[in-house]
Length: 347
Ligand code: NAP
Ligand code: ZN
Image 1 (cartoon, protein in one colour):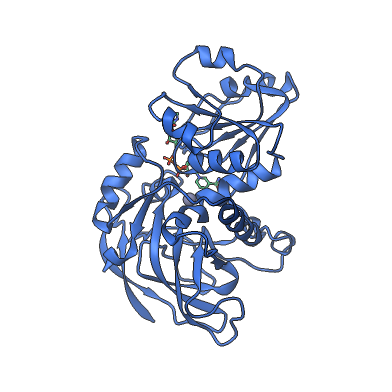
Image 2 (cartoon, rainbow, N blue to C red; image 1 turned 135 degrees about the vertical axis):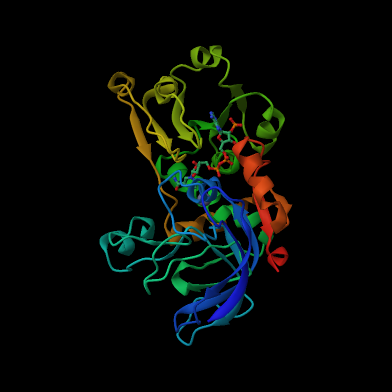
């Protein structure tokens, strides 16, 4: 066992604080990673605060992890000491069900093992990336291309793959009109990726406060959803709407913005249910769907895509003692556009 420094939530209502946790010994198929950066995803906040159900505490969040391999197990073939690597939202799965065999480990029929707050295959609870080191099965570790700096690559491990996967699945590319709802961590990656895929991109944000940024990130148009005329003007416009909002929104209003046979994909995961009127879908034969992160193979593909197109995330690097302030800023939609913790400050 390796005792390492970490930041944990002691309960759903207390601030995160410095602690130590145990990492398992490096097994034959494991790699030990010295974490360099850990991203703050809104899912960390939902989980810690019990939005998605009760959890065990202390809870170390963090499922956007970038670092360097410092040890490998005897059977490891994919990674070597010194490699620049990343870990996202999963650290294991059964490996033999139909979904795992297709590369969709996020849909493992036996349940994937989440990077934190999840029951590991050895019966222990997983603890996430707000920490100095982590031990992960080699099949759940991806390579960070040399063209990407580790800090800006970190948010790609969740925000990147969660937006890349549905944009690809729904055929986003040249000639397609795409709207991204919410310009936060996921939203800003969705704008960059959809633009790089060649689509015409519109941001639908609560206000015009971040308009200049949105256009710089690759959006062609930018509208405020607080203005009712936005929903009139854009009626029937989009082939795909990607909803990245962490709070409840009026899905019916957004479905009205879809073109005939258009699709709205929800990746935002608010605690509350969102009511949908069947007629919002029937008229125009529209689709409402969801999407969960992406598989490991697709995560590698997304990293290579971002490297090829020369972009990572727009980040604000913070020391560990600012995690609690960063949570408040994320909750206030004041993130530009992902907080990334410098793992050296966990010590
Ligand atoms: P984030 O950085 O906080 O971004 C969310 C954005 O939503 C905000 O920046 C804001 O954008 C908008 N927003 C927030 N509150 C709103 C409200 N009341 N009404 C309208 N818009 C609002 O969060 P994130 O890290 O990108 O995560 C977004 C959501 O995706 C979270 O629920 C997270 O748990 C979920 N998630 C899902 C998956 C998956 O696999 N499906 C993976 C990762 C995360 P504007 O200021 O531009 O309006
Ligand atoms: Zn996440």
